Image (tube, rainbow, N blue to C red):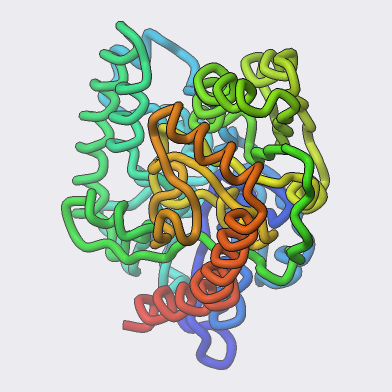
Length: 392
């Protein structure tokens, strides 16, 4: 069923509120949804509440239902269920959201396409349907679980290996069931057993104005602070990397900036030189005050918005391979990359002390995001992809 002026009609179903002022998945959805509304008539069905009023005005209709949302969490509750269930954690965690969203999502007869956000909503796809269905996987769960298992001890590692197998089985079902599967990076697409379309994460380049690098030895980390990859990465960084940096640069500081910090992250703020800034309204001032942005993640797929934002802000970036993958960057040109604590610490010390190196990386990083990762360009390509599938 076409929308006004022959615009295709699309139903967007999510348990994570699109919101340009929130965390990574919220920001991605908000920009892509806004771009899609320029080409299609879109109804939004959401478990939770839409706070982004600009988005509310851009869609035809918003239906908000009660149900758990998909905000970052260390893992879903219920250890017994985790052991006995055949479903991966994300599917179990969003069971309540699916119950709330299902009756609306499956009334697909009036739309040219239904699109879901996150693998946890995948069971909503009907076996018999009258229209095309798409899904965006913000992470490839099987690889995410494998990375988490490698970084975890004992029984937790064993449980995560089971989670890896469950996630791989879900990914096979998703590739068979959906007409279109979207992922954020080429690396993610290569992990899946079938063809997936790549729509990368982006950044609002115009919202970040690069300034001169401060001379102070200051590091900055931004992100959702209750999200397991961020918690793990920060904990590892503060225990293994930061002490080595401090040995060479005793006055170094680390500003941890984000939302929903749990006890583990709050505990880090008691370390020398570490400062926690919770629930800030904007990250730009903290990036402007930092000399080096760090992305020390050991778990995760797709691409990290924190890295894109730091480069857009004109800050040199140092991080792990996982933290900086999927961006097509050249190590040593756009950012400094290392997984070993001593090597990552050496990179950071170099950026703190070498103005020419820091300025060169900052300029190259900014040019990279301008060329490849502006949301306006990415959003247009995403809209073309979904509209093309809706009208096929």
